[in-house]
Every structure is written in structure tokens, then in C-alpha cells.
Image 1 (tube, rainbow, N blue to C red):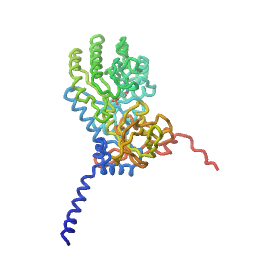
Image 2 (cartoon, rainbow, N blue to C red):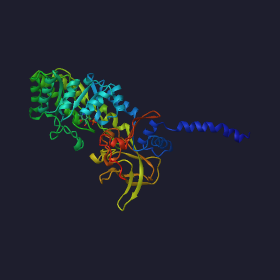
Image 3 (cartoon, rainbow, N blue to C red):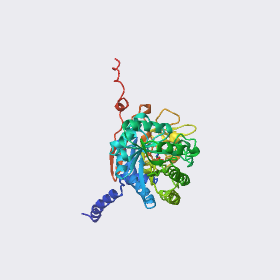
Image 4 (cartoon, helix red, strand yellow):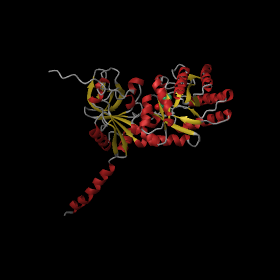
Length: 458
Ligand SMILES: Cc1ncc(COP(=O)(O)O)c(C=O)c1O
């Protein structure tokens, strides 16, 4: 064998090994897309592998991210608030694998409907580890919550009376807290701003309405008052709203003890922690929030003369950044005004851009060249079905893949079958594996509860 051949023979296995080592795992490919490296061939190959195996549109969740978020919240709050209980707000993402994961991480379940109560039970939650918040509960939901020993966040005096009547009927004591409207503006967008005085949620501190509710409940043997609850909004990026809310709520805790002799087992400051949706976006970290809340909490509990357990109930914070929506480009169209990249998902798949004018980063997979300003347009037959507007992205072609980042919260859970498009599949990535955690919807799913089809026309 010539010297050249010999050195090639020796080198080739090493080169193959290097190439193998360089190929990112699926988890690494997701992180690379986040770091704007979706154009790299290894990263593109990983996304192609996912699309080939599972089709598009596809929701992909990164398990490591969810675990990391839980750990970071615990690390920030645990040492400062020894009496702490964290819940997961299921509405953000009700995939059973996600609920399983967060239950295994030791979180309680915060739910907003009878359906979410059943989702939590199905994944192994006990009724006592569930908290039920809704401003409009129907009689079946109230009955079920009381049967299960779930904490009901009562939202009106009318509801309190209904809870009392149902508890009496069941000969049980209902566990309750009240959802309080503290009248605080956390400076988030209108649709998810829940703690302002104009919102439909909660009993107002203003005018002594919340106080009156506790006073009334105190006289009801059918209810056991366990706490006070508030949730001032979602995608909150600054600590001030929380700090002001904590101050007001702790003042109320003191008032309840001083005037009514009520001591609360918990004070729930809600969820709402924001996540960065844009490159380079800076917002409060869990550490910032815990640090700013600590002195207010200490001062408040000292004044009240006792310490309720601090409850938190984020949703988006745990799962938002874990989610990636993988889509395929159907067509590219240049109009006199704009260039549209038409993809195979729309607001039926990801509602947030149409509903909240929310911003999601988009990466074109496997392309790095020739940036053009485009709108990423959905496949729903509506003018408003634009997933991303005016983005400078590498030129895409029909058949290319693109990935929409931070789609793990209020993504699939808000998806619909509008335009008779079945729901997308969902996979959970662990290392280099992607496990199907909900199969793709089918046309049969669309008609599962409808009358049988008419006989085909001759
Ligand atoms: C009562 C309640 N708790 C918690 C949450 C979770 O909010 P986020 O996902 O912003 O943390 C919500 C969502 O709107 C909510 O309504």
C-alpha cells in the first residue's frame, strides 16, 4: 500500500468519528436554533430528522429546559422563602407528558376549568394538590372541586353562596380562598392584564369588597378559609407590579387577622413571570423577583404577626421557552408590497401572534444567505393569519423548514381545528431522542362526536 493510501486509510475513520461527534443531538440542535445557528448543516439535519419522522407542523418540547426553569425558580425563592409552595398553571400547556414532568418535579396543579381538573387527576394529582381558579365556574365544576377536596379560588359573593349550598348538600366543608383584585397594573398587554380594577377577575380590595367576602365566609360553617389569591397578569417583565401587589396583599393579611381574627395558611401571588421572546431582550429573572419581594414579605409578615406559606403558580415560565413549532414552507409569494413565506401552520396552530400581536422569533432551517424582509403567513383563510411580520430572514424556498421559537406556552393548548385542519403532533426531546407525546390529529378526530357521514353520492 502506498504511503498516501495508508495515511488516508488511517485518517478516514478518524474523520468519520469527528463528523459523528460534531453532529448535534436534538437537544443541542434546539439550543442552536435559539442561538440563531439554524442555518448550520448539522442543526438542519437534526430538524430534518424530526420533520421526516413526525411531519409538520410539529410541536417540539425540550425536557431539559422545563427542568431548568423549575430549578431556577426554586433556587431563587427557596432560600428566601422557606415556607413556599409552587404550582404549575396547566392552562399554559396541558400535554400529559408536560403535566407528568411537572408533577414529578413536585409542583401542585393550578387549574381553570373542570376539564383541567380532570387532566390533573388523569396524570396522578390528588384533589388536595389542585387549586381551581376561574371567574365563572359552573355548578358541575363546583360540585367536583368540593368532592375532591380541591381549593376553590372563589371569585364573587354569588359563587360563595353557591359553594356554601353545594358543600351543605355534600355534607362537606369546602376548602376556599378568594381571588383578590388588588388594583395593580403590571404593565403587560391589555388581554392578559388581570389585576387592574377594570378587569373581570377577583374581589376588589377597593371599597372593602374582598374584606366583606371574608367576613361573610367566616360565618359559614360549610367553608374553610385557607388563603388569599391574586394573579395580576401574564408575561410580566418587571418586578414593581409584584412588589406593590405583595405589599397590598400582606396589608390585607394583617387586616383579616386584626379585624376578623382570620389567619391564612397561604398567600398566593399568582403566576405571570415573563420570558424573553426576542433576541437580546432583558427582563426580570426569578432571582430579581425573589430579591425584590423578600424585604416586602419580611416586613409584611412581621406586621401581620405570622407567616402564611407563599404560593406561586406560573405557567409560561416553566414551558414557554421549551417549545418549538416546526413548520414547512408551502410557497413563497412576492407581491408589490411584501414577500410572504406561506407555511403549513396558522393561528389554528399558534394563536398568540393573531390574538395578542405576540412576537415569536422565526429561524429558517439550513439557510444562511440572501436575507429578505418577509411576513411568515399562516395557512388559515383569514387576513389576520400572520405568524411573524416584517422579519429579515435568509431567503426561503418551498419545501424548506422553519422553526418558531418559544411556542411551549399557550401554543398547542390554544390550538384549534379551525379550517378543518387536524391538530399537530407533539414530541418531547430528551437528549437525542424525540418521543411522541401526542399523535397528530386525524380527520376522524374532527368528526369523532358528529353524526355518521351521509352515504356517498352516486
Ligand atoms: C389564575 C391564573 N394563574 C396562573 C396563570 C399563569 O400565568 P402565566 O402563564 O403567565 O404564568 C394564569 C394565566 O393567565 C391565570 O389565569
